Length: 280
Image (cartoon, rainbow, N blue to C red):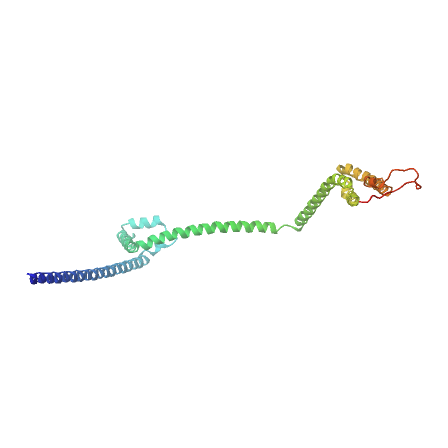
């Protein structure tokens, strides 16, 4: 009984191996057959394409031979149509013309069918190329416009350039005068601050600079500066009196800073006054 079971298991294993090998062989043969079919299909396709090209070239040769006058600029379509419809000996063969037209359509259709993918890609590429060409034309127009404007600006006459230069210098002079006027308007406030802080040297320098500015030729004609001129002229004399008074105060100890150096008069002192410096 055990021997029978072993025999059956061996037979089943052998049968499964045979089935696997058979399936592998079938798969390999199917791939070979498919490859052969593909090769045959490609061969048929290339043969059909070559036939279409040959047919197209033969039709073109026929057109150049029999209907070449229709491709010229001086060809009149109305005259050609009347000649084709004329059935007399002077007319043209309409049936031959129609057959040539049909052969041309068939050959073109075969070429398009064989290369429709290439034609589709060519159409898409053509659209992209047209967009780039349009964009390039717009940029070229902008560049041309800029060049024309530059040329117009470069052909100015010398007299025009001279007037522009003089105008520029005039505006610079106006800006300089306006800045000087603004500085003069600030002088009274600054001068009063220096005098109150007893910065007399700085006040004298500022007053001297202000007087030099007001005595310039362009400033002497400005009526709006009359008040400032009077202020500067008045402070030129008053500042001298203020400085002399301060010097007298220091010399004769009249300054508030010298109050500590004075001593009260006492009976019996021999000097007319007594100056006592207190020890700090």
